Length: 512
Image (cartoon, rainbow, N blue to C red):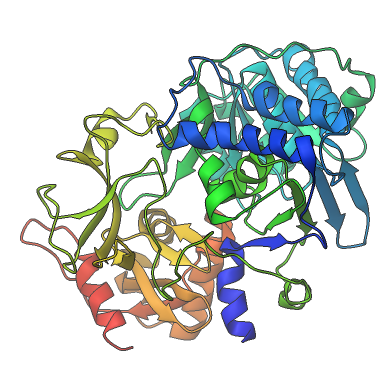
């Protein structure tokens, strides 16, 4: 059982139900109307507003209701450290602190509307403050996992042209090591105690910042978030999301899938660098007025998770174990063939979302600065997800596997190109191909097939494997290292010389 929990926890969303989920009279009606309003927009029953900002239109509204005693008394945010330290904010306190943080970004860091900020932080309260502060100031936030290496950070700073980076004492040295090549960076903000030469300290600045801040007026389709996503070829791509795509788009997720109310406490264990942290720890719960709970576990501890009362069921829907469930409005999800035509019920194809004649506003906007990649995701009238699946006669979708080579290991999405690029830097590696390999705990893990350079053929294989694994951990994020390594004479290739990862992957999974 523990192995099962460990394999799924990184992507899980837990709902800690309050003893009483009831609130009465006009208060209940008013709160229901607020949530239903955004859900109706998400379902296409109401027009998308021209202007929308999650901080002013949602969070400040909850703060107003809270101040007037018209909302249950749950906090907006509840954080617990490994040592038992607690931080609790009401919506009103979150509003005040985030206004101060917005002033810090604008005044101390010199950032303007539309500028981009890279935030590489673990699960600390400041990460949530920065999310809201960036919304208030119209600044585009670019979250990153705290396992990023100096090379990863350098690439993200250059590709995004970010003018500011926010991180902690642990990662500050890695940032400093790549500063010579970061010509766009104007300011560095550190989260933690004490001072560091050349860095602004967020805690110190918040202590003297004004809480007077007027939220910028953002259009619904203005940029709000950018995520770097792993790809099968090339370096990670920038995926752009608008204010409405997440701010309104996850209203249905919170209301219909998670069945959240202002009386609930929501616990999402996803890393702050992943999109699931945004929609599970920010937008879905807060649009429903729920409390966001965070346990700052530096390392995953199944026994801590297992101690909590938990559930996550689709509201009012028959559950078919093993299926993904049905499409969530406003998405029209279909299974399509290689030409974008919908396949018959029960036939395998690519899971796709209809984008013609109207693209769902809650779908990401584009791959930033990469029109070719954006165009490649469209097949006929559909956006193709890259996942293979089938749909049954009742409209339930069943996941079959990835259409591409992305490796999903214990909830971490890993692009093979990144691992291959790290390995090929080692003198022992002549050629390499990285694929997924089945694993009873993590679902799948990274496996590297390596053709050795002649000078290393006679080396001790076990020592060499360990050396290569340590090399990858140093060059890129540690979670990407190959847990399995196999030395081979050659790699399968097409007639044009392209390595056929699919051949290696099929052999690997055929062993199951």
